Image (spheres, rainbow, N blue to C red):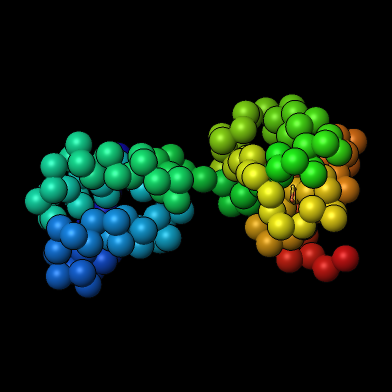
Length: 163
Ligand code: FES
């Protein structure tokens, strides 16, 4: 699908704000990631042309850093901690429960772009282990049986519901 002129000019503005400097490649990609939630292929090609950096180099940077994503991500990012404290209290089973419930694997996004699932190492809340975070919202002492209810609450109330 061809991208609209509006989308191209949005990316142009980002590139021009860095004076089309090749050395700003990472910063430019970061801003595109922030705008779209990932790095669309057409945007990578456009960056390559405008900065005169070979596509293979642009793609190399885009795929090297964890901060960049090459596919669209869900509205809600679910992070499940597999750090030691959480792992010992069963977080791997929580992750499996989420994979089953959402029909995706760790690192993937649901087709409807509602949820992305990502395992992480220590969220800095070990006393609450096992921990799952959706956006900024923490779900503590998680178990596989709590997964369905937690997802339902996020679907209904979003990420900012207060306990
Ligand atoms: S190990 Fe899970 S929050 Fe620290």
